[in-house]
Length: 349
Ligand code: GYE
Image (cartoon, rainbow, N blue to C red):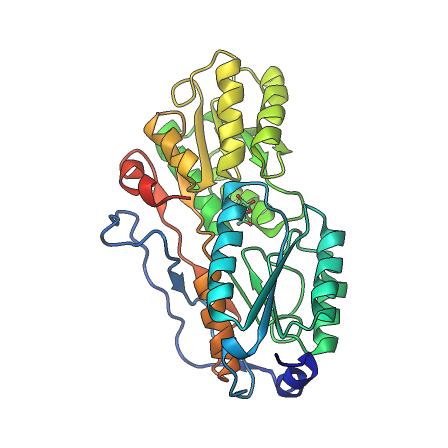
């Protein structure tokens, strides 16, 4: 295996290259069928003209150790991501190691420091919170270990603190959930928002995106917003409480499917019929969520694809080859509702 200090000599020349190449945006088609769109694979689009580039190292993935810092493994999305990283990491890297921060940013920092001490050459991080990882990113920089962010963003400057961020456009996800709601519910109604993990980039951006749309409709009111920490159990618990204060709610917007499924259970326990009395919309596209759409409980879910393994490994190899890496690699999301959930459920995680 390589020593991190060797990769460092390559990395000192990393630079931000602003290219004049026009931004490349592939239009997304929400009407795609499973034949047209392989839902088991991520599809990406490049929406930036900033690139990060290092000198070619002559190295292949099989020559290096890749470390992956996962934040937690407490829902299907995250397990899907962990499995995808492991499958590709073990298949392509010389050595692949991974850690689980078990919902603690402080543990995520020490996990990363441990992996650097173990001699990883490249680090992939799924940051739990936007803030708080700075000491870990600094330790990586000092050790000459390039960092690739996947799934959530973290504070820092591309090319300096990390090479790139690969993930969905969370603002757009919130906007798409809101657009479905406006179309389905109309321009009046009381909405409960189940917020994701406080301080995480998807929760902040999904909240912003949703408001970008509903703020245009004075008749739509977000009557309560509370964190369910992206988990089903908390989603259910929080929804039980919020329902007591807001029994006349018309819709639930959950920042992920697991919280939506918890909310659906709470609605049923309170004697309501989800999908009829109360509309529910969320984000992710898990197997259970697609089943809930088929059952009529969940109205729609915006896809957020967790299968980062192939994209992460491909991007690392390009970086080792000295290719310019876009500072943001955006994953294109599909959209699931009653028109297509049954077509895609067999491919869902
Ligand atoms: O939506 C959620 C997970 O970071 C984009 O985190 C991800 C989110 C995903 O726990 O289910």
